Image (cartoon, rainbow over the protein chains, first blue to last red):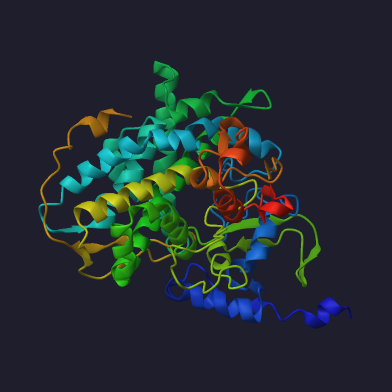
Length: 413
Length: 69
């Protein structure tokens, strides 16, 4: 018997990250695992490992050779016929796939879009500002990122409601209603395919889908299946997570008025507040990797083919790294959170997510600073992939429509 | 004082650009940050240190001579 055998705790747990219990108790579960067994093995979904300590999640994210992102690793499996590139690939080819989209996601391109995001936010808030009540998630935080990503892909953004329904179904229904999720996936595939055909018939435009279709890896264009996977991934990333972060944060600002007051009195703290909300209310709870060879990791024996969930949200509450981790502290120093992951797969949309979040929060705190949550906070049933609010009813003192509002937001792409 | 961004560690989180926009620049197609020439001379130490401490990849290296600590 080796020392590792003696020291390693029994890793067996029955945690189902797609369950209602997980949604309501995720941070308690992380804390319990951290104390009891930070490298745990769940019997759910055919078995998978969970990493909850910051250092473990960080180390796994850096080691793409052992913790691979090759496809067929989602828990449960997604069943998509083609990998979602770039996320389902490993270095070195990963870099070639990312490079196709990088010009669209750079910090400078995010900054350049800020006026457009603000116009869009203004237009959306105008639609409910006089009423004194709204579903702020359904009417602002959902449509804004959704319309942007559709516009960037060169799709018809007026159809954002349909796209949102399909994407939400693909993400949030996949564990408990696979047929419904598959119907969403089919709609997404069909419509991306139609957009590709349109470009082949009419010529490429200045849009992200055209860039993906013209992109090359190892000197060759991407097969259609990978183009679809790439576009699908952009829709997944764009439509769900930024709204999740914003909705989660609006709940916190309602619960903790001193945070709201601080943001109103000191708007310059918003960038630091953004990082703190990303840490404390991480939308993407975790992502999976697949083990490429038998090995020992932090005292546990992992086998080739084992699936491992890197729980970014748990890492972000690790008291070894973050003092008083359950407290939201805009003045936190050394906030190296992993909300966008770490390593070669760092979220490509992180720059845009930050700008959109900041625009939405600042517009809300300027135009409806006294909002209060006026009904039930409805979360997506399944928080295993994205922890997010589906519906957030609020009331506020009605205000005037903005003189800034106009048709510019729909034309200034 | 000297400051570097380790190109092998940087993964393009761009936190340093937000904290010290005059000291760092972003190489879009490389997906990583780099130090602007002369940044160590025209950016105050506290700002550079904040950038270093917020980098999720620990890619920023600050070398501070003894008389500056």
